[in-house]
Length: 316
Image (tube, rainbow, N blue to C red):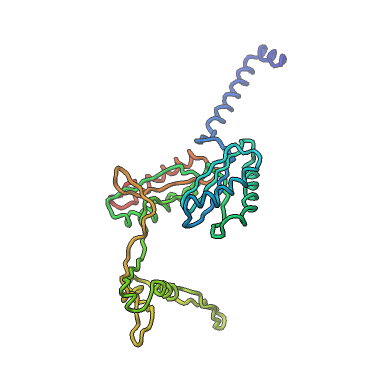
């Protein structure tokens, strides 16, 4: 490098231009450098989830969890092995050393689990082996606040806010928490069922067979080919109550004769509160590999436009 030092001493202008070019390139690269919350790392953590509906935690522990742990414990490179047994579900978490390839680790765990399936209870669901993906964690939570009924707020959150956020580049999934979806409920009276010698299964079968829409094949009429469809799906709550469950002599027994049909809400499975009041929370996940900071900034920019389209009394 002596020749470069000699040139820089003899030609100071050349040395200045050389230094400035390096500074310019460095600044340009710095301005284009992406910023993210965490570095791109694949954690070698594998989860084995097995479900046995109705089983007690003690039964899940002895019949499933212990056997799964014994099977995967023989795999090399395990750093930590822990499990959780609850009613109807067993989860085993296998943490490998960082040098372990997550794909290889997942395949080895899957092979061990396939080998012990004959030893597990017959009523279990197929065990699922998944990798812990940091990109699958939510990156943003949005709250839709209003004094309107939860069903109406849920409709606005699903049809307007969720669809607007999901259309943003980089957004993978938007999940609603605390929502109450519309559901048609059929409330049956046990005494009316007993008086008509019917059961809830009979009503369920009638609703399933008479409230359908099935293809009816094709019809060729010269140069044209028509597609036929049998429209048997009810169009209103009143029509659902008119479905015939059984013919008793000359009198048809309808659904409304055995109880009442209600245009109501589905059972609430999740709950969300803001300042002690019920609200709807939108949980946003990004697509795998996308920049978290860039996606969040795009969402925040879109929310300003979404707020303008919301009805009066709604606030994001």
